[in-house]
Structure formats: C-alpha cells, structure tokens
Amino acid sequence: MSDRDNIIRLVDPATLEAQAAGWIARLDRDQPSEADLAEFAAWKALSPQHRLAADRLAGLWSELDTLAGLAPSTLKPRPAASGANQWVAGLVAASLILAGLGIVSRLQLLPRTEVYDTAVGGQRTVNLEDGSSIQLNTNSKVEVRYTARARDLRLVRGEAYFEVAPNQKRPFSVYARQDVVRAVGTAFVVRLTGDRVEVTVTKGKVELASIAHPMASTSLGRVATLPRRTLTTVSAGQGATELAVLERATLLEHVDLAPPEVSRKLAWRQGMLVFNGESLPSVVADVSRYTDVRIEIVDPSLNTLKVGGYFKVGEVDPMLEALESGFGVHVERLDDKHVRLSAAL
Image (tube, rainbow, N blue to C red; front, side, top):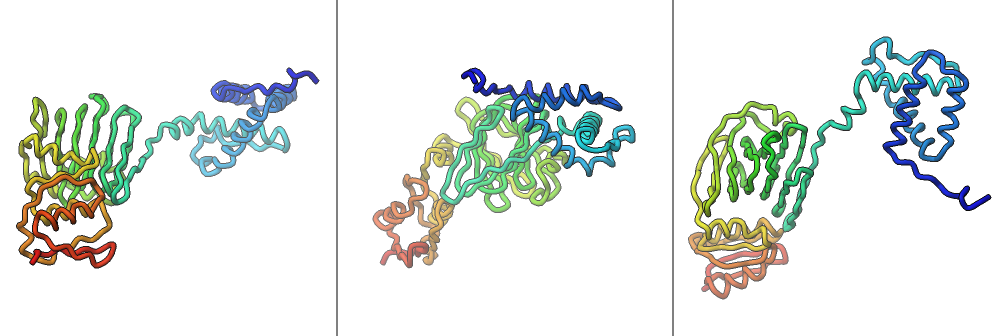
C-alpha cells in the first residue's frame, strides 16, 4: 500500500450537503433501480463523512413522525419491504416533507433569544452580530432576539450601556418594564431601579414609548408585537446629554445633564463609582449594588450627610475608611457581611 492510499480526503460540508440533496432528488421516484441503490451505497462508503451525512438523514426521518400528519397525502411515506429499499423510502419521504414544509430553512432562520447576565459585582461586554455592543453592569440581565427586520432586546434587571450600529431598516428596541427605548444608531444607558426606568442618551437620539401590558411574563418575541404609545424623544449632541425617567409607562422627568453629572453616571464603565455631594443613603444604595455586604444606617441623623469621593466598584473597605476619617461616621463591623453606620461620638 502506498502512502497515497493512506491519505484521508476531507470533504467540504457544503459540497457534501449538496451531494446529499442530489441523491434525494435522484432517488425521488417510485422504484429506484438496483444500480441507483448500489451507487448510493458506494457514495456512502466514500468516507466516514458521507456515512455520517446519511445517518443524520436517517435520524431526521425518525424525528419527523410527528410531522407526518401535516404533510399532504402525496407526501406521506409509502411502504417499503426492508433493507436498502426501506432506507430509500424513508429518505425520499423525509426529503419530500422537508421540501413541502420548508422545515430545514425555517429552523435555521428561526429567531432565538439569547440571554446574557452578570453576578453581583461583575461586569461584562457583549459584542452582537450586527456590530452593536452591550456593556452590562453589576447584577444585570438582558435578553437579545434578532430577526431579519428587527433587533429586540429586554433589560430584565440592572443596568446596561447600549452602543447601536446604524441600520434604519432594522430598528433597535430595548424593552424595560412597560417602556421601550427605540434607536437606530446611537449610544445610551438604561437602568432599572424598582419600577423606574432611567434612560441616559450619550450619542444620537432615541424614542421612548410605553406598552400598556405587563411584560415580565411575556416572551420577548410576543412583547415586540404589542402596540406602543410614544412618550418623548431623548437626544445628545454638541456636548449635551439628556436623561429621562419613566415609571409604569409614565414620563416623570426629562432633563439636560451637566458634563460632571454625565461623567459620574458613566464612571461604572471604567470600574469606578464617583460621588459629588450625594446623600449617604444614596451612596450606600449605589455601593451595595456591587457587593453582598449589608451596609445599614442605624442613625437617622446621617440621612442628610453629603458624601463625595472616588471608589473602585466592589471595594467596600476604602469607602468605609473614608467615611470614618473624613465624614464623622462610626463604622461597626458586626461580621464580614454586615456593617452598621452611626454618627461618631
């Protein structure tokens, strides 16, 4: 045996599938000849890939029993004796049903909902197939469902920064609670806090709309078909950034943001938390999003305390040390997961 006889020739999958389709068409007759069957057997024996392709077709046929009732009478499998004739009959019937119903092509094109999430303290960037991207903040979850005509997403919890690749023929919509953020080519942040939806637009323009229907238990594909009511548009440009706050399909606030406030709101994208005069309860609530440490304010006099500073996300101790040294706060560490704050004596 020569070295050439030991060479295993690889077959391109697309070519193999085309050849298999050709065999289906060739065997699509009432009585395939013995020569046809012999040649088909020889084709299967050309390589393991050829045999596996034939086995996949056989497996497909066995899984199509529930579809037989959907096929026209002329497409129902006809009886066969046994052996090779039985295989050919199944192969032909399977190909006819698939051709008549378009099962394969529809399954390949059927939209799927992909889910991306982060744990408490985690962050993640997801690059989507169209060139858009999502940056997920701590403890966040988003669903993505792309079709040929639309790009539909749902923010289930948390916060995310969306950077959208332009495509006017394929709108980009983010669903959150009962509200919808629709954009073409832009960048914006959506944050969920209880029933509130906060939208900050950093580039371009988005349309805000509402859906008078509870969406939490509705599939994303179904939600995208529900009628919507336009509320307002939010835009950014020439150094301006706008913020809109919605709650239960109602617009509560629509304001311009000053550059320092924009930087503060987006600091998490660089792994930082920035505070500039926020109340201590607000600071504690924001820091708590990134950790499983419970921070409890037990002294009501601290509720009006204003706090400023820069902290890394997820690092609680530096913030507690800053409160002790610079803001007159007594920190009581009950254990690794529970901290109490009160006014220093």
